Length: 128
Image (cartoon, rainbow, N blue to C red):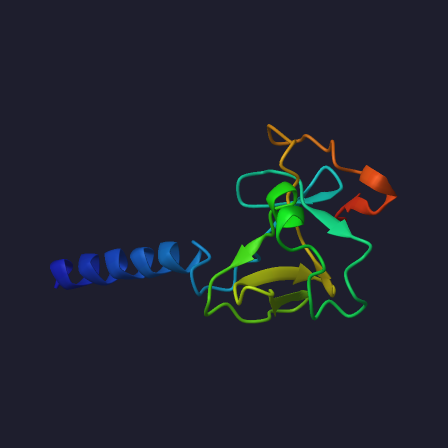
């Protein structure tokens, strides 16, 4: 009987850990840190003024996306609350927050950097 109880507890702990990893669980794809949204690695996320209203599409593709890599979503990712999934021009999936697609800035080198904020007056730190 004790073995069954321990096995059940171990299975419950394993399932909880898997659900919190973000792979199909309900964990948000980014979090708030110091007044900004940051990706899983802690790097600052940005929004782009030229993205169409409503967030159904990204206007940053090709060379733009090399400098402003999108916050990618898994192919099977689904909308959750303020978070939505858009399909990029290349068919890949990207996360958007409150209708605004999210991007990293290639010149940020460590968590907490926000060197892309205000870039060309069209890139802005994403706010929670």
